Length: 213
Length: 91
Image (cartoon, helix red, strand yellow):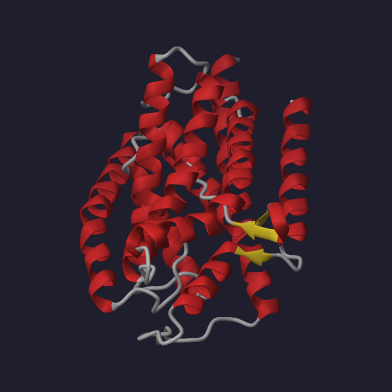
């Protein structure tokens, strides 16, 4: 999720920026439209943004002495169109890159693409699918958060594999190597994030709020 | 109301516990990925290392904690306002 500064060559960094900008533009537009609706919607958007800000500050312990960040995309995806997460994710990633030197400005496009575009959209489609097969709301959201989290880190692995292919097995080999680094840690973290998201949705009595999807 | 407050306290306790454990000697996956990159590509040199090297370990933990506190504060305010609106509607 947080590819550090300078680990993507200029061409790759620029390409990911160019790819993510339309999503960011759309996300900002959708967020502004939500803010104009009414105070209720603004508060929900604030809550979703705060949830992402809080969760990405955590390092959840995982297996084999490792730890990782959750993505915090669950609440935004449950309450708003998935495009909104691009705007929220941009703010969070920018703050972390500038204040904490975590991630980077050149790699912000790539990090945005993984955490704030690919992850939320994967979560959204997962929720749609779970609803179609009549799974409960909580199960749908939990599954969506897990899938979104895992897709985020899968995209990060792909981004790194493109730049650093394995000398023998190429991009595929490197992808498996990076997935091995992220997936082992991320599976338990994604489960914890799913539980937290469902817990927050239930505790805050957000059930009666109209889910926009 | 009491149940909701208890739930919020539980959430806060959980986040604090996870933060304390996570900030221990555990290696992050982001750092591990950088190691994997350098293992297979020892000749790679980062073309840009940022405008500053980032805070030291202690300051970094503090700033992450502040990020979490800011998120909890904003989220807490929004939750409070939303639940108050809901309770007002019910009454």
